[in-house]
Length: 295
Image 1 (cartoon, rainbow, N blue to C red):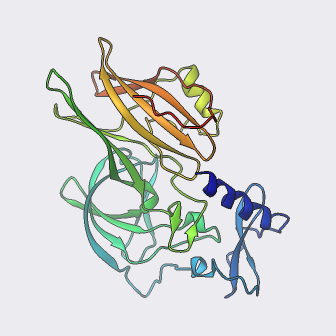
Image 2: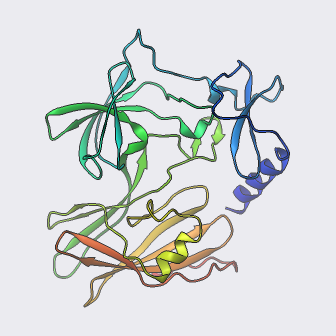
């Protein structure tokens, strides 16, 4: 983690004091490299010999004379978004739907390349072909589609109750690609809970002083609606244990930053609609070695 942090800081130092380009300008010349300012990543036209990032800016836009090409895929996912754009087979906007937020869908295809309508690599996405309710076939923006990835805990308690938590990932620009770090990634990383009593879905967060503290770290409250288990260039969450109590299940979570760590606890409780999660604590970051993962 320390070596990673050093490389990030070195990259930021080497590219400061550059001039960003207006993202509303959609023209991009052939030779483009990524540069950075303190607050943003942008693109500039540059004939520099250092073309490490040029391949990232091989722009792909929909073609009105050509249908999108999809690679077959078969995954279950859920949608997130108050207003989710629906596209036609050529990749152009067809309509926007406001009834799809948190809905589970079946993925049947992923576009064979990333598409982008801006000069910001972080806005690139795959078109995703999905099936809703086993009947409706739709094409959506991959940034609204979240699939399950790593299983972080699978525990069966003495009463027979079993819980599983999974990390999720979307079909936008990832934290890293074949060229290295992108300094992009999901704007949020909601976790999926699956139980042997029939629940499968997102877990809403109860607002309290600890969740507000997390918001002060830069998390948008509207985005920070559901319990998250993160894996990004800022920090990594690991679920170390789950303990059954009279109030519910306490998740013991270890979070490691680029520098430092903390151990915090989240209370998982059943509700009439499913489950809810409440932060019980969120201690200050510790920096002493060795890092301690509490169980």
